Length: 183
Image (cartoon, rainbow, N blue to C red; front, side, top):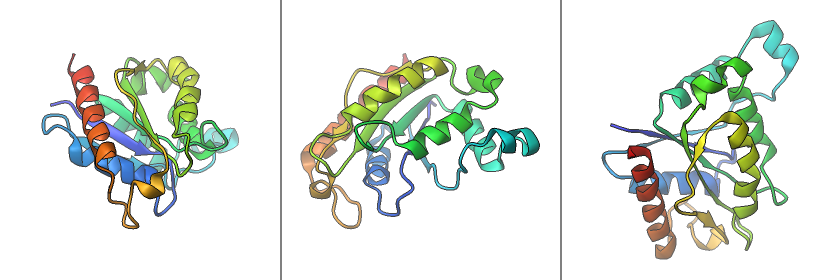
């Protein structure tokens, strides 16, 4: 059975992106579950640390989870119209050492989604991820877009979706990504 590993790109306690990932996980087809994780606890990349101590255990464990997944879902915030630094840092760690890139990312089906409190959604961040995904050798999914704007009106204070249109979009998005993975 194919599985998707979903990574929330925000470490914030009440993250809209973590809420969106939970929603997607709840709506995933039974035969293609979404396992959830986050970037919480991943240190800043430091080549000296890598050289002296190797890959941190939290990074090594996440690399193994990515490599074992049938698909990867990056649920990205948008900071200053681009990729958020902490999330990029996590992906940078996952690409170390460079010789591991094919094992971890090579040919991996990958989808992008995101939520933001602003009116623009996360389309610019999702677009900014594309050069990174290309160099990692992933197989990006372009079948559906899921970019949630005005997230404070979409999720309640407990992180539950209150906008049925977004729920429907999320359901269609994960169903289409699951179909993409099954091909």
